[in-house]
Amino acid sequence: MPEPPRRVSQPQGPGSRLPPGASQPGGSGLGILLVLVIAALLAAVVIVLFFEPGLIDTSFNTDSETAAVSEVEGAPLLAPASFESRLMQQVPAIPDVLGVASPIYEVKVPEGHVGPFEFTLRLTTPTQDARNLGAYGWNGQDWVRLGDAALSSDGISAGITLSSAPDNIAILRRLQFRDVIAGRVPRGEEPQSILAGSLTILHPDGWQPGADGSLLGLADLPTPVIAQNVWPTVYADADQADLVNDILASDDLRRQHIANIQHAIQSGQHDGVDIHYLHVSPALRSQFTSFIGELADRLHRDDRGVSVHIPINASGGIGEGAYDLSQLGASADFIVIEPPLDPTVFQAATDASLPTLLQRIEPNKLLLALRSNAVVRSSAGFSEISQRDALGIASMLSIREPGPYLPGSRVTLQGNSIMLDNLAGGIRWDNVNRVTTFTYPDQTGAAVTIWIHNRFSAAFHLMVVSEWELGGVYIGNASADPANANLWPAIAAFFESGIPSLRLPNAILFDPIFSVEGGELSGNSGSGWQFWDLPSNAGDYRAQLVVSDGDVRVGHVITVPVRAEASE
Image 1 (cartoon, helix red, strand yellow):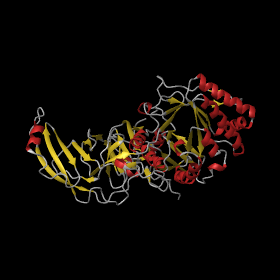
Image 2: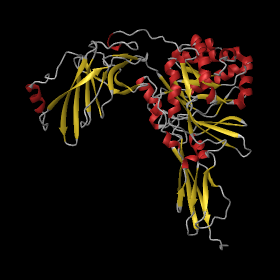
Image 3: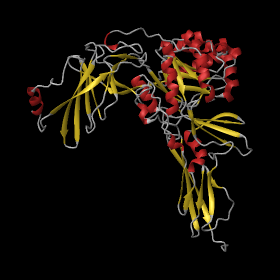
Image 4: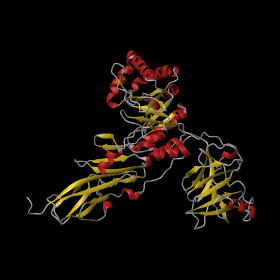
C-alpha cells in the first residue's frame, strides 16, 4: 500500500514536534501540580498550574498570595492543596499538522473535586504568537482537541478552562490548515444553516448543458445571498454522457458552450463555475482538456475560478482516461476527487489514485468529495438515496402471521429488512468499510445492501484528507434538507483541530425498538422481531419500529385491526 506523502519540515520553537518515544523537555522528574480549590455556591473551581520540575514546591503559595486571592469580592479564603502531576515519558506520535508547545502532563485530580478546572501550562519556549494554540489530550488512540488555549500576556504559559479534568493534557500548535470547505446545494434548496457561515465556496445547482452548447436551467441562489464565493455547478449525469461528448467533439459546440458559461457567470456576477462531467469519453481526452483550459483562461482574466470533478477507481488508472491530470491541474483552481459509489472500494480507490494525483496536481488544489446520503447495491447496480429513506426501509415492519387478529392472541412483529436470518443481518457498523450498513432480500430473494453515510463515516474519509494533505473537502449535498445526513460535526472537528475525530457509533443505537399501543411485547428485539400479545379488547392498535444508523432515528408505524372472532 502506498504511503501518504510527508512534506512538512521539522518545525522549530514553541511549535516543534517530538518524535515518538522521545523524552519530555525539562528532564524526567515529577511536575508539581498546584491546585487551588475555590468553593463557590454550587461549583468548585480548581486552578491548576503546571511548571517544569524543580521550579516550584508544595510551599509555593505564600500567605500574602493567598490573602490577595481572598480579596476578590465574595470569594472565600482559599485552601491551597498541592498534588503531583507526572510528565508523560513515552510521548505518543504527534501528527504532522501539530507541533508541541508544552510538556505533556498526566493529570490526576483527587476524588471529591469537581469542575470547572482552569489549567495553565508553561510553554517549552516563550512566545508572543498566540495563533492556533490549543489544549489536547491523548485518549490512547488519537489526540483529541480539548479547546482553544489562551496565551498569557508574558508569553510564558497558556491556559484553558475545562468542565472536567482530562487524563493528560498538553498545549499543541496547529501547523497546517485545509482552506476549502466547498458545498453543493441542489436547486430550490437552502444551505444547511450551520454550514452557511462556514462554506468557503457555495455551489448552487441548477445548470445543465444543452445539446446546442447552451446552459439549461437556473442557478438558484440562497436568500438572503450569503457572503461566500458562489460558483454555480454545471452538472451532467450518466444519462447525459452522449450529449456532453457531442459538445466536446465539436469545435463549434465546445466554443459555444464555453462562451455560454462565461456569459452566465459574468451576468450573474458569480465568482466561478463548478464543472461536474464525470462521464467523458476517453477518446475525447484532448477535447475536454482544451475545454477546461480555455474556460479557465477566460474566467481567470476576470479573477474568477473553475473547479473540475474527476472520478477515481480502485485500479488507479485515472490518468489514462478522459482526464489529463497535469493539464487539468494546471488550468483549474480546484480538482474535486469523486470516489466510486461502492463503499467497499473507497480505500482501494484512494490508495491507488492519490499517488498519481499528487505527482501531477498541487495538493492544495485537491478536494475530496464527501457523501451525505446512502448507497444502495441491488441486482440493478448502484444507486443513491437519502439517509432518511435508507432508515425508512430499515424501519419497515409487519406481522408475520396472516390475519384475522383476535383479542389476546400472540403475533410476531418483525422488521422486514433487519431480521437476523440467513441473509439479513440487522443494522451494524461495517468495520472494514467504516460505514453503517444492512442487507435484506428483495421480492425475488436477491440481496440488497444499503450503506448509510453519516458523520461517523465522514470522519474516517477525512483521514484521506489528513494523511495525504489535501486542500479540503467538497460536500456533495450541503442543503438544509433533513433527509440528508449532517456531516458538519465531523467536518468542524477536523478543520478546527486538524485531526479527524474517529469515533464509532454507540452499538446500542443499532438495536431496533418496537413499541405498541396496547398489549405486551416479549422477546429480544435485537434479533429484529418481538412477540406481541394483542390487547384483550377489540380495536385498531398501532405498532411502531424505530431504527438508527448511530446518528439519527427513524420510525415506521402500522395499524393492526384486532377483531373479536364473531365480528363481521
